[in-house]
Length: 376
Image (cartoon, rainbow, N blue to C red; front, side, top):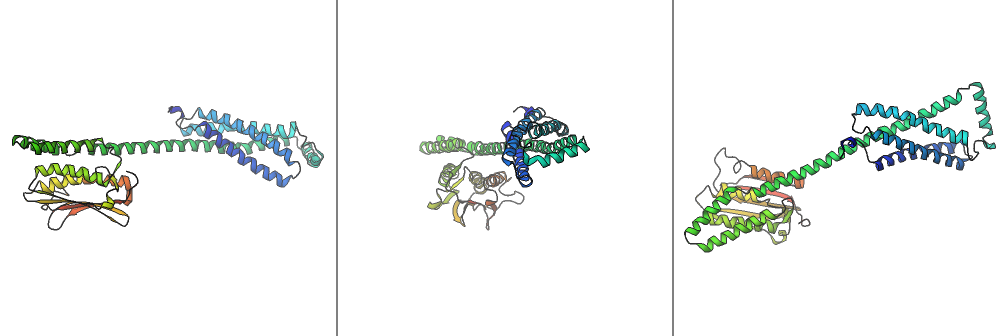
C-alpha cells in the first residue's frame, strides 16, 4: 500500500460518510421546516434535495483534497481540515441562498403565501442593510460546523482503518508465528531419537536380524512421512494421532525391548475426536527420555483418553523412578510449555494442562480440551 494513503480512507467509504452526514442534516432541516412553515413544502423539498446534492459534491471535493495530506501528522491535518472546511461551507451557504432567495425557480418565495414573511424581511433590511450579510455569515457558520464534523469523522475513519489493518497484520503474523512454531516442533522431533534409531538399526544388521531391521526401517519411514507431510496447523482425528504415537513407540520398543511396556486405551466413540496434530509427541518423547531410558527395570508408558462434561481428556503417564531433586518436570519443560501454548492458542480458557509426579514414581500429564468432531 502507498504510504501516502496510509491514513486515508477509500473513496467509497468517504462518499458514504459524506452522503450519510448530509442526508441526516437534510432530514433535520426538512422536519423543522415542516413544523414551522406548512405551506409549499413539496417545492421546498425539491430545493433542499438540490442543495443537498450540491453539498455532497462539494464536500467530496474536500475529501479528495484532504486525501492529499493523508500521510501528514495529525498536528498538520487538523488545521488544514479546519481551514479547508470554511470555503466549502461558504460555497454551500451561498448556493443555498441563491436557490431559495435569488433564483427561486418554482416561485415559492414569490407566492402570496409568503407575502407577509417577505414584507417583514424587507422592513428589517431597510432598518439594517447588513442583515443579509449577517444571515449569510450565520448560514456559513451553521454549515461550517457540519463540514468540520465530517472532517473529524473522516480522520477518525482513517485512523480506524489503520488500526484495523494493523490488527489484521498482527493476526496474520501471529498465525504465521504459530504455524512456524508448529513446523519447528514437527521438524525437531528429538534428534537423539533418530540417532539412537540408526544405532539400533546398525546393531540389528550386524547381528543378522534383517527382518527386525526391515520392519524398523518401515516404521521409521512411515513415522517421518506422516509427521512431515501433515499441515502442522490442522487438527487430526485422535485415531490418527494415536497411530502416529504407536509408530514412534514401536521404534522405541526395539531400543528398549525389555524395559518398555505400552498401554494405550482410547474408547471407540472418541477415535473421531479432533486434536491438534502431534499434540502428544512431546509428552511421549519426555516419557521415553525421563521415564524409560533412565531406569533398568520395566516401565509402563500409558496413553489414555476419556470424555467428561463435554471435554476430552488425554493423559500420558509413565511409572518410572522419581526424578532427582532440581531436575524439574521431565527436564527443561520446553515440550510441556509448547503443548500448553498450543492448546491455549487453539482453545483459550477451554483447555488446560495438568502435570506432575505420581505417587510411587513416574510422571503424568493430562490435557483437557473441548470435544470436537467437526474440523478434522
